[in-house]
Length: 401
Image (spheres, rainbow, N blue to C red):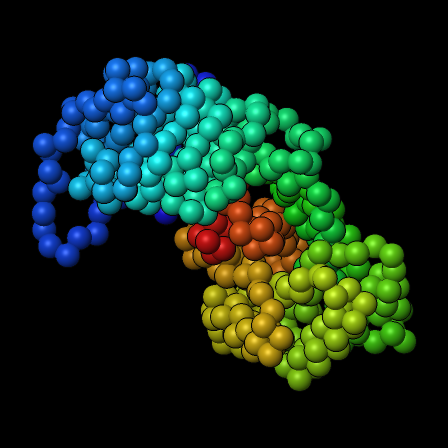
């Protein structure tokens, strides 16, 4: 798991990839000979820019401070810290640094780097090719074509010429400027508490401009939604053939039909996929795996998680031929059912449909699955208290990522 230290400001910008330890082939103490060492890395060897190496838990930190440009290194193995490269866990580049030379960080394997506002130029080999850089500069970084560069914007920007990020709960989140459209097709397990709207709210809160439509009817099956002669099937046809283009289409089957009548379920998926590929060829099709509940589980002599496991297997079978990605909402429900007895995911009237907490969890899994996003950073808790919302965010994160 990657953990981002909440130490982001214009005076001291820090990058690190945190993890609980270092994997080595043998038991070995970290060499502490580098701890406290200071190296002159200035362009003119005048100590205007220095690198301080400090020992931290699990490895080392490099703090770059001073004013001006950092010199070139002819090869990556010429940097002062080359021998401890795999053990470098944090790099902090302070304000005042304006340029990075060749190979300065090309051998350091980190998830991403923060660049201060004064840093406006890098070398084509300053980092490993394809590295992700989060910059606070207001102008474009020179020589940055080899990297993925995101520029800081506290508010959602209108400029589409660059990509932008902001910080949520100490983590960088990319601003998505283009509007994306999603269509949910399902029944009451989708429309309770308006799961599409909750999905939209969470996505927009973390920077994805997502608009969610839905076509739903209680107890309706995907086979009926695929039938143009069915009243709801007609609506599906109209939506697919309409002028609105969907980026994502999420299909949800009736709660027990995935296993009680698998052939019908598979037939409905296949027919809808064929229609979507014909009329919405750019849309990504996803399957929305639902959850187990006590009444049905007892009738089948299953536990609730065993019921969900059966549902998940059937969704996986149905999506395999078309290589469809599955949103494992049911799996998230099972985790909460087993581990967090104080959180009720089920509607009090029937102990089957989702409560608000269940709908919120469903939406979290949808957002995480659609964008491969860390939903723990969302500040949208809806009607839930912070503790409950945070627990559900962590469960969704664990299921998706």
